[in-house]
Every structure is written in structure tokens, then in C-alpha cells.
Amino acid sequence: MNEPAIDLTTVSVVVFDTDGVVTDTARGHAAAWKHVFDAFLRGRSAPFDIRDDYLRHVDGRPRLDGIRTFLASRGLELPEGSPDDEPGAPTVHGLGRAKDRLFVDQVDKYGVAAFPPTVALLHELRHRGARTAAVSASMHGRKLVTSAAVTHLFDAHVDGDDAALLNLPGLPDPALFLEAAHRLAVPPPRAAVVGAALPGVEAARKAGFGLVVAVGRPELGDERAGERGEELREHGADVVVADLGELTVRGRVLPWGT
Image (cartoon, rainbow, N blue to C red):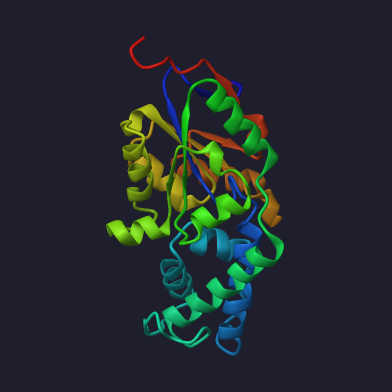
């Protein structure tokens, strides 16, 4: 079996999804969603499953899309409401604001950690001449990267604020990844994407990126690693690893003009 690798003779840019790939924040997101959804679901449906429901319906999607997708999976629907709704109000925006407040409070109180294997991979890529970008559907993407003290390891950042400013659709549409490639002036076939969420993997494949690497979700306690890996491959992953420490880097990017 070939060793999983990024070959810098075929790609010169690597785009990283932030949550669960760069920053250890998937557990925080999932816990915040469970708190909010369980309060709403009481008397309506079974509790939110922090693995299956989060991974299938919420992970990687813009906040409001995640709410709509999850509720639809339970045959439920809420009025949209408005961005001014009280956190926890029975509207899409109300649930979204409650989740956002919980998650931001966690980040402010406890900070954010970057995964050591990802940091090591970023250093290796940059040492070999590759440029890198961090992408997140979250409005707090830059805040997370800054809190994890890895801002200096990225040449470009695209997050939910950019999506709102540029009117970009969220995952599984590939617009966020394509914007990152555009900012680094490379076509998708010359760039790799490293993601963990099914919508992100699907988006990268749809956009024709040269390599799609998927990382499992062991931090969420998912005991079905083999099944999860197959699902990621079905959504378009070329390579699936449980940890980015399994990934090696080959070759190096030649300087412009050589």
C-alpha cells in the first residue's frame, strides 16, 4: 500500500479546512450544538447525537445551514426569524445565536489548541516552498487561527466574514476553497485540500482540486473508523488518514521562474 503523501511536484498550494484539521475545535462545536438542540428537541424528538447528527448534518456547514439540515433530518422546521432574535428563540437565527454565544464563550475562556501533527505538516510544507491557506465556514475562522497561534503559518485566510462580504455560498458549494486558491493565484488542479467534514471533502472534489486529503474524527469518539473512512472516500477523498502525522511530503515547489 502506498504511503499517504502530498507530492509538491504536482501541487504547490495546500488549503486547510480549519475546524478539526488545524484547530481542535470540533468537540467544542459539537458540544455547543448538543446543548442548544437538546433544549429545543425536548418533547419533540430524540436528543442530538454528538457523533452521527453532528458529522452528517452540521459539521462543516455554515451555522444556519447546519440548523436547517439537521432539523430537516428530524422532519422539523422552524421560521427563519432574523439576526436580531434572542439567543435560543425558536427560530433558525435564534438557535444559531445561542450556539454561537456558547462556542465563543468557550473559546474566550479556554482558548484554542492547534493539532501538533498539523503544525508539523505546515512547517514541512512551507519549508519545501508550498504556500498554504486556512478556510472556515465560521465567522470566527480568523479568531480561531489567531487563538491557536498559527496565523503565521498561512499565506491566506478565507472565513465566514469573507463569505458574507463576497456573497459566497457555503459548503458543500466549493466557493470558499476556490476563493482561497484564487488568493494564492493557482488553479484548483495545482492545489490540494485537507478537510475533515463531508461537505468540505465533497466541495473540494467538485471543484477539481488536484488532491483531496480527508482526516478522520477520532476526537469525537467515533468508533466506526473504517465506515467513516469509506464515507469520506465516497464523498471524494483521494487519501484518508486518522491523523495528519501519517501524511508525508514529497518533493519541493520550485521558485517562480526556474
